[in-house]
Structure formats: structure tokens, C-alpha cells
Amino acid sequence: MTDQLPTKTLVIRIATPEDIVHIDHLDSFSASPTRNIHREMQKYFGSVDPSTHEHTIIFLVEVEGVVVGKAELMIPPHDAVQAIGYVKRVIIHPDHRGKGYARNVIEHIIAYGRTEQKLHAIDLHVWDQNTSAIRLYENLGFELQHRELYYRLSL
Image (cartoon, rainbow, N blue to C red; front, side, top):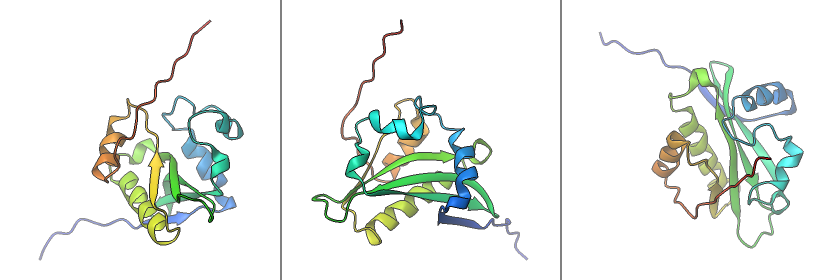
């Protein structure tokens, strides 16, 4: 007889309007310095122009029926010269971090982008202090394209 560790059912699925409460809850755990900027205002910050993307797909990570994480994939228009997706707002609930769920959802997005959306590449931004996310992205094959400096003058 062998001892087996119990396995938990992991599901990654596309969010529906009924999931807004879960999405808002997870967004409250974001470590991003811009986390409190209203979603509609986000288009004025950062180097990604949302007008170059047709829509955003939100993927949820569920373990045993409980939503524990999310990630968003911005999809370019079908007639885009370069089909480049953009991953944003990867958030795992603090009680569930370190269990590989971020890796699971990013791998799922990569496969979905390649097969379902026929993307040529996927971009993302990560804050330089987020060393665990940087390590994850590099382990998945993402390569640094450039560094961006963000300055503020407090008055």
C-alpha cells in the first residue's frame, strides 16, 4: 500500500459577469502601485494602449470550487499586423500563494493564446520589486525587453 497525498481539483476558466464579485475581491490583493486607480483610468497610465486591443479575457483559477486567482489577457484585433497579446493583473489570493497557481494560469494563457487566438507573442509588465513573479516569467521563457523608470515629485 502506498501513501498518496490528496489532490485538489484545479480548474482554470474564463470569467463570466457573475464572477465580478470574485474579480473585485482578488483585485483588492494586488501589489501594483496603481491598484487603486479606477479601471477606466488605467488606459492613461503605462505603455500599453488599450485601444490597440480588441478585448480582454479574464481567466479565473478555482481550487475545489473556490476562486483563488485570476489573470487577464488583452487580445489584439484579428486584423492586427502583429498578433501580440498582453497579460495583466495576475493575482493569487494571499492564502493560496506559493502553490503554483500563478504558473498554472500563465501556462494556460500561453496555450490559449497560441492555439485559440493564434498570437505570435505575449507581453507583460512586472514591477522590479516583484522578484517571485519575475522568476516565474523568466522560467516560463519571457525575456526582458526594456526597463521603464517611473518618477514622481511629491508636493
